[in-house]
Each structure stands twice: as C-alpha cells, then as structure tokens.
Image (cartoon, rainbow, N blue to C red; front, side, top):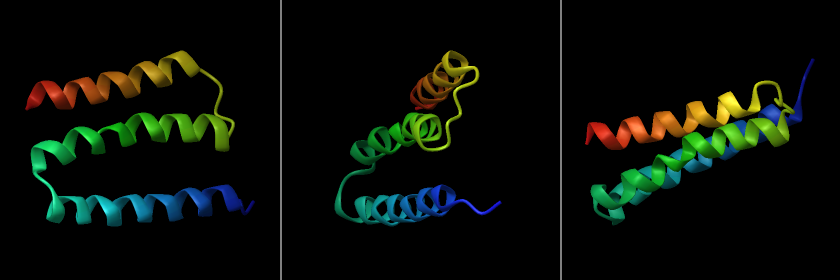
Length: 75
C-alpha cells in the first residue's frame, strides 16, 4: 500500500540532512551536534503523529531519550 506520509517523511529527512550539512559549514561542530541529536526525539514524535504508531508509546519515547543521552555521554 502506497502512503504519502512516508514520502513526506522522506522529503523532510532529506531537507534535515541538507541543512545539517550546511550547519557544519556555518557553525561550530560543538554547537551543531546537540541540536542535531534532537532529530531522534523528533523522529519518534513524527512516527506517533504521522504514522499512528501509538503502541508502546512510553517505551518509544524513553528509548529516544536514552539514545540522545547516550550520545551526550560519549562526548
């Protein structure tokens, strides 16, 4: 089954990647990386609202938060 929602999410992912690369050119890496890590949480939220992935909602949000915290701890 074809879904325009997936096409829309793919388009926004492309735009985010493009501007992420542009941000590395224009700003310090130490400023860009923390902002880019929010994409993990935003992906979880987009999946919930655009794809109706509501099962195990708390687990998905917690997993996204743990992933972001893990990246910050590695730095």
